[in-house]
Image 1 (cartoon, rainbow, N blue to C red):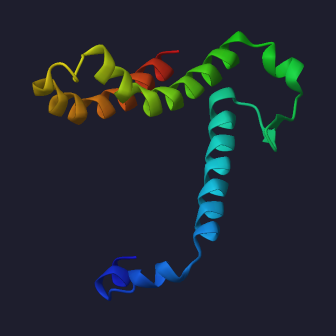
Image 2: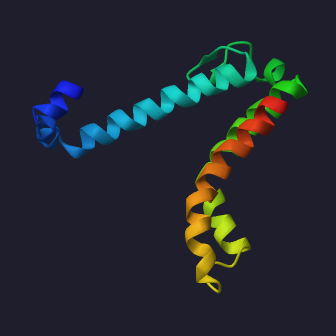
Length: 119
């Protein structure tokens, strides 16, 4: 990829249609979610269905806590920075806005990881 960048061949990516790129990125998201569920719960999944069945999957509270933390992590990364802006009232105090913008994303990524590995 470094060679492609140095030779300015990156513009060839513009020839790939947007629906193809969107579908590819969506498929990557599905694979990452499946891998995350497998890693968090320790159960193999087949198309988002646990191979052992839902009853056995839900019987372990540790497993449910870990999967809940994983999903909470994803939500917190997405919604957390906005939550920090609202809680710290950056609309009323513009001097805080830049600091919150810099550090809220970092906090929203690291805090759930610490909690996840603590559980």
